[in-house]
Length: 293
Image 1: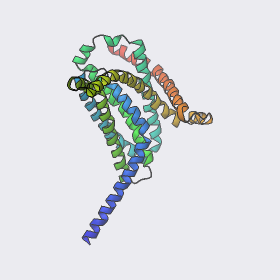
Image 2 (image 1 turned 60 degrees about the vertical axis):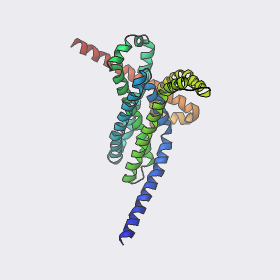
Image 3 (image 1 turned 90 degrees about the vertical axis):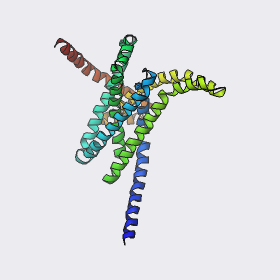
Image 4 (image 1 turned 120 degrees about the horizontal axis):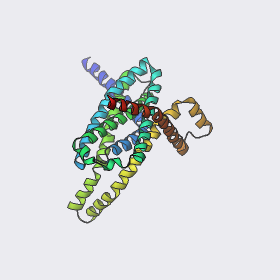
């Protein structure tokens, strides 16, 4: 009798784990697009820092990302049960913030492009620039993680609470490990190229030279992709969750393919510009008030 009960328990556990694996796989497929944006954004966040500080920054942001998941998963589960109507508005607030950061980044690039050439070594030496990068990356990760968790929650919405918890946890941890593992690989690729040049011969040395030639171009491209990703992710939240916009795009057959991406990008830029027009004067006023005090 005891053995029969044990086998039944093991069978139940195996069945639950199988359901978790299936749901996790489905959720991972659904969130693949956001994960790609997450990768581009986070790799872009650690550009421009000293080589010896790249991995510590990636590790710090990865820990912050895991903390984000620990915060977001219980909140998503509670909202799904007690206040499902709040999920979309909160997601749209996060999307608006992403669009705002994208526009702010563009404004800083074009209006203050000479500022970054002054006194950067001092900022890096006292850790202010590094701390800002980490905070900004974790803040951006929070928005992207929220969208990933909400999308994954939609996949497992009809499952039991235990499967929801295990599937969301598997997605959260798996995505964090995958994204920041790839980010670490990307930011250290140039060091690997330099190692091949100094230690390797023949093909290895040529490969090292190719890596060193390719990586600066790749990082510049990644910077552009990271900024575009802010608008694409933020804009897509609005295009999919604003009935008027969604209906208009559907009528024009602009809700699939390249036209959908252009629509998401356009909506993201417009939303970001509107939020900047409201928020930046308030922030400017607040800074002046602090200085006056």
